[in-house]
Image (cartoon, rainbow, N blue to C red; front, side, top):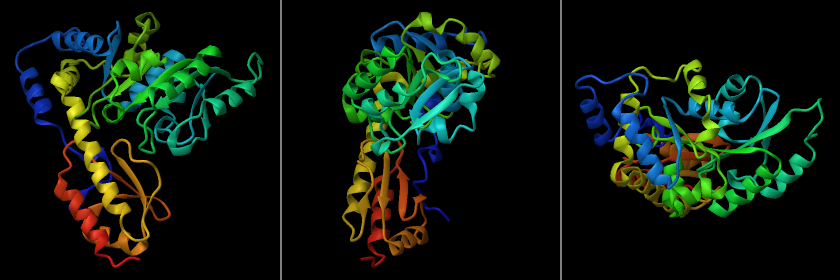
Amino acid sequence: MIVYDFRSDNVAGAVPEVVDALAAAARGTAAPYGEDPWTERVGRHLAELFETDVAVFPVATGTAANALALSALAPPHGAVYCHADSHVNTDECGAPELFTGGAKLVGLAGAHGRLDPADLERALAGAGIGSVHRVQPAALTLSQATEAGTAYRPDAVAALAAVAHRHGMAVHMDGARFANALAFLGCTPAEATWKAGVDALSLGATKGGALAAEAVVFFNPAAAEGFGFRRKRGGHLVSKMRFVSAQLEAWLAGGLWLRLARHANARARDLAAGLAALPGARLVHPVEANEVFVELPEPAIAALAAAGIGFYRWEGAVLRLVTAFDTPPVAVEAAIRAAAGSGAG
C-alpha cells in the first residue's frame, strides 16, 4: 500500500480554489463552446500576465495542447525538433504526428534534458533543407521544465530560438510544468517565453493544482488563425468550456499558480537534500523544479517500497520522485527516514 506517493504530480488532487470555482461555475447558465465570461476573462488575464496580446485556447489535456499547437506550426512534410527524452517524443502515443498529419519528430540528445544551440545548428546543417526527399525543419519544441526536472534559462531559450528562427522554424514550449520552471527562474512569464523567442506555449495547470485544464497560448494572435477549427476537429472544443476556463481562472488568480509551484519545488529540494546525503546516493540531475532523479543503493530502494513510498524506478538504480503542490513535509521526512534506515552503505 502506498502511504506517500511520489510517482508523479498527476497523483495529486485539486486545490480548493479550483474546486470552489467549479462549483460556482455550475450554477446558472452560460453560453457554450468558449463564448462564456470565464473564458473571456482567462484570455484577458493571460494577456496581462504575459504583457502582450495573446490568443488563448483552453483544452482538456496536455497531449492535446502540445499536439494541436504543433499542428499549427508544422506541415505534414515538416520536422519538429525536440529533445529525445521529451514528452512529445516518448509519452504521447504519436499524437503530435497524428495531429500534424505526419510531421516527423526529430529527437536530439542533450545533458539534463536540455537542448544545446550548437547541437541544434549541426542537426539543421545536415537536415537536407530544400531537398524534396527530406522532411523540412518546421518547428522546435522545448519542455519547460524538462523531463529531467531542469529549467531552461531565458538566455538559453533565446539562443535556441535564434537558431530555429534563422532556419524559418517556429518555437513551441511544452509548459506542462511551466509554473515550476518559472518559480525556480524568478523571471517574468514574458521573459521566459515570447521575449526569448517562443511563438506558442502549452500552459499546463493540471499538474499544478487543477483537475483537467490546459491552454494553448499564441504570442502572435495572427499565427493562431484557423486554430479554432483544429481544436474543434481534434475534439477539444469543450461544449461547457466554462468548466475548463473556471479552473484556469482560479489557478491563476492572485498568483496562486506560482505559490503552489514554489511549494512543490521546495519539497523537491528538501527531498533531494535528504536523499543525496545518504551513503551511496547520487543526484543524477540538478533539482530545479519538482522532480528528483536519484541513484540509491538497492537496500534503500527496497526500504522505500516497504515503507509505502511511491516512486518510479527510472533506469537501473535511478529513481524518479515527483513532489506536488500539496506534498506535505511529513511525506518528505518519511521518505528520507525510510531510505536512511535501510542500513545501505
